[in-house]
Image 1 (tube, rainbow, N blue to C red):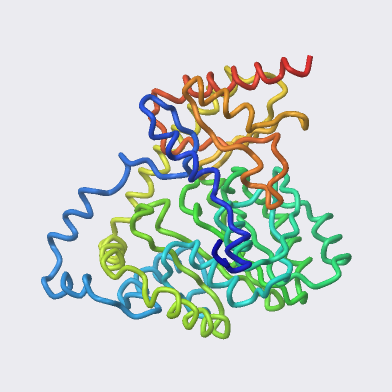
Image 2: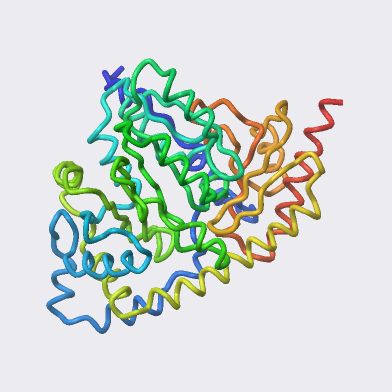
Length: 401
């Protein structure tokens, strides 16, 4: 028996990763992976960009790059974020190897074993895994249809024996819950954490994937209106737009926090992939990003509407959900005594897979929910797959009668 570190002993494989071997089975309809659709990647544009590159730039793309990021990408990304209203001129930007690395860097910077992190329930499984790896104590706050329960946030802040180090939030097109924080809730939340010396991590990987103009207004980053007495660390990603294979995210933080972030990243991987940074810079600087994003929004909205129709047609009345206004996900809620893991096994046997709710519970307990990702679906499979899941839920409900 090897003497593994305490932090490694805390780690468990993600149910989503474990499901991928099941998904690979021929004919399986998968709502499991929160991935972009393969047919929507900008393959032709990237081919054209690479073929058009100066030979010297091509050679530099194969080389190590600076830890903060490929300088031209830092400039083009700043311009992209500036148009969203983000404070890129008063903060520092770091290119990361996916936004999960940004979360990892910030956790390493601020959290010692046993320190408290506040987060939503449900929350992003990747962040939960990171927090576990640093042996943090996770205190979860229920997520409502318009954001976290602020009453419980207040209670936690006043009753916890130690001050939390981090408040981790996904305010826009939440993974897994699909909800978007209301403007009122954002404002009140920031007033609650003001002067508390808690680092707020705003994870905004889906920001560009809104489905209408109202959703665009709702999804303005909190970092845009960061009060002087609140510290917001903003993370974003190219994974949901250009593709996860680029392995590129970013972190926007104040100068004092940035200085340590750069050192931590240097120790982790020296630099993010220079090759994909060169390509991402060209995609941004040549003005290809906005028309491409417009097409993505149209495609994902269509998949969302097809999923909504299939849910309304097939699901029993006791299953509840909110219609998302952006992103990739539906979050289904069943009565408390339902077990989505049992429903999953039956659904897999009949040809459709999803992710059970406890995967996204920091305590790995609450299991009367399930996540459906419509992003990577074949459109023609959506109705059939939802019908299989609905039939498994109905079958499960009969065991209570």
